[in-house]
Length: 382
Ligand SMILES: Cc1ncc(COP(=O)(O)O)c(C=O)c1O
Image (cartoon, rainbow, N blue to C red; front, top):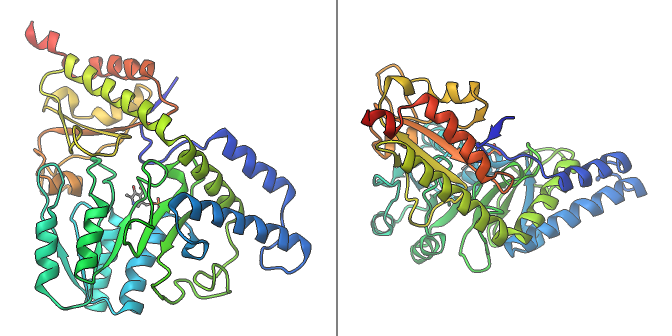
């Protein structure tokens, strides 16, 4: 039996979501742009899904656009803000996902956009004071893009507080909420935000489908030219089955958020406790005692010859997790997040990430496997 502790990379699709999607695949095949009954049936289902998503984030229906996932939504927000809103400066963080960082590099190179990165502390946090100072400093039209929760170490921002600072200085705000949609309450009616991004596969929906929220006060042009789908913003026949799966999985995630988060938090603290009990000098990246993404436990193991190929050996032992370590030689770049928080290059980082399908028994199995792969406290004391 394998143990899947890589839910921040992607989650298994919920059986109820598979059932809903399968039924649609079997029964509906019309093109939503066709005006006949078969088309209209699919169009109505897509609009129903849009309403579901809008209800989940408390937006208007017309502010939700379906995309191919988090990467596209993030690209769309940043590139359209520069092209259509006159943004000439973007403030971000070095710990953002590569789909933000690489888009920023593109915009700097091709559109002459000035990019500023906030500094981050060892927990991966930036300060509101630094953000405020940068916003105060310049009259240039600015977009702030900061992820709600970091996918590698789980560090979170106070989205409400960031939005208030941006609002005070008239800056646009985008947040990559890919790791938090469906896991934390998000209410765009309370937060002054212009764009946010979500991806179904992070909350037990299908891969290759996501959405972007675009505040109704913001007017941008199509990101993909073609037909008039997605209110003219994204040409191309909609990923109907994906959209249905996204709405179903998000509705379930919101419905069961309290129950799931309490349970997942208990799995994560149990794992942290077992690791501390069993092994010497275990550290956790990020701010696990503070406000952080409860699905993620980023563990920093002390150097040991046995832990060199830890991720590979875990995989061989039947455990799926993710790597991420600091740069230890000029040749390898390591994880940009661990590098940004100045993680020790000789330590080994493994990210374990959980869902409500995981159990404490699985944690015990993983600890048992780790006992064979890294020295235990008991071994070291002998
Ligand atoms: C924080 C964050 N942003 C963006 C993405 C990209 O999302 P997608 O895989 O749906 O394109 C991911 C997924 O790994 C992520 O964790």
